[in-house]
Image (cartoon, rainbow, N blue to C red; front, side, top):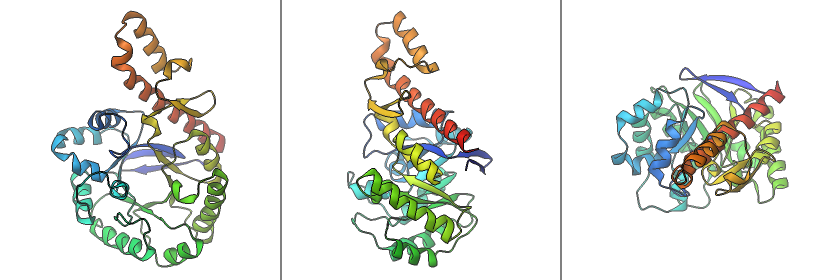
Amino acid sequence: MSSIFYVSNKVLETPEFIPSLTSVKSSYNYLNLLEYLTSQTISHYMISAYDLNLFKDKITKFNFEKFQKRSNLFFMDSGAFEIYNNIHSQKWNNNLLIKTALNFKPDILVSLDYISSEKIVNSKNELNNYEIIRKKLKKTPQFYELVIQNTKLKEIRKFLNNLEVDKKLFAICIPERNLGLSFLNRYQKLQELIKLIKVDYSFDQILLHLMGCSNPSSIIKYSKLGVDLFDGIHWQDMIFNPLNNDLIDFSNLMDLNCECKFCNEFKKNIKNNENFLEKYYMFYALSHNLFNYKLLMKKIRNEMI
């Protein structure tokens, strides 16, 4: 069912797609993408705390305060994904995560997961980590989300049995990649997890966030199961095709014959300036994507009313 939430005096309608940004898989200049993403009024956004700490000397506090005054919600990811992929040499731990969260003041701190480069994380570590961070953020206005890396129902039951829930727990997150390789397996596993979390444990007031899912066709199907939030990075390296809700190569914007306001403006400017195509391609391609993701989610919400 479609719902409206108020966070930090900002509005979030669900289901919703949150474009995310990570230096691990950024196809372009990270700081340019960061500036573009946080300046948009058509989208909420999610940024890694690890990256914000990594680039902090190049990001002025004044600029970020200006971004935070906009109506879009600022989600901050824990940085566990960057550590897991081990691309950068920067040390990362809970204390740095908390320090970064207090400095940049996200509306919602996402993924209170165990920060480790280990491939398998045990539920006890995740629960302990959740308690530590929850207590440290107790006096701050931030909401937070909890990630569950394990997908074994027996282990998740143990985890939920010991989970202390408060009013600031905004969502429970499940990484899509952990649900299996095929869509059928992912769909069935997600169906089981949603029943367990929202029905068996009656966490119906806590949102369900499927992490790393930005495929439009999958988003449509998962929304019908009851997923409230999606995030992903495909918005910045592939083109959203609104004709079939698919993703295509990033260079193919002109092949879509799209009539959205960004594509129409782009085509008009190309006629008047031959050099316009390469210079402004990325801006219009990204704007086309965010606009169409918002439009897709609006259509899904309207069908759920």
